Image (cartoon, rainbow, N blue to C red; front, top):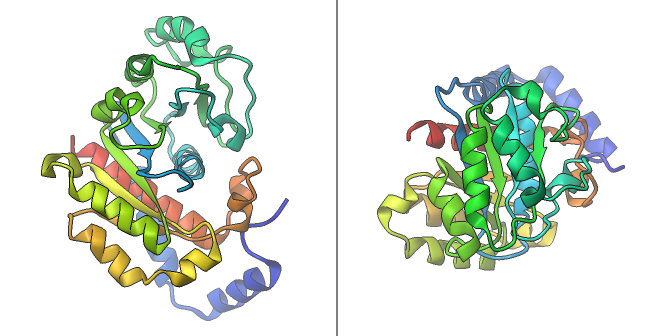
Length: 281
């Protein structure tokens, strides 16, 4: 399975780190401290995109994996796609259940403790609990279930369908404490997303975070990053650039141990920003 970085780049980075200052480790330590910030009630972070092909499921898997690995309290990932999404697959877990099928038992268990969930939900190696999808035309079910499970989980990451105004997203996005909007790191991806977000009411922007996702080197090379970031920063939105990663781009189940170092750093930064936005509500 591909590593996020090719071997020569990993070797070069190791050598460079040996002679570098302590700035980067110190910065990463600060980011991870923000990822571990305490919450008083369960926070819900939705992940969506304005257009398809942005890589939102991969980003949701990255953020959920980082939070689960770095936090001492439990973290939940929810496949909020109306039909079966690929989040469980990308996280390397299998479940024959659908969300409507398991929801009644989960609702009952939500009033108890984590032990009551052990036979209902799979977990990743990093300890991330995963709820299957397939709610169909019942988006309120995702909202109600995730809200109930927030009694047991410090943070929930929801992989939503595409479209800020999609009917299937309305209930979930309105209930989220923060929303990560995944943007393809291409000129057209930035343009269409910035235009769509500019039409939102100012109040709707206050809990958004932009993930500028580089999935392909050619699109990334065509993008002028400073103007791209400025297009969103003018709206008051924080922007995190998620670098291209061969392991993530492979489409196979994600193994956090194979992330390239820049991927781990920026995924942690994105998780920290989303949690910061979520804690403000």
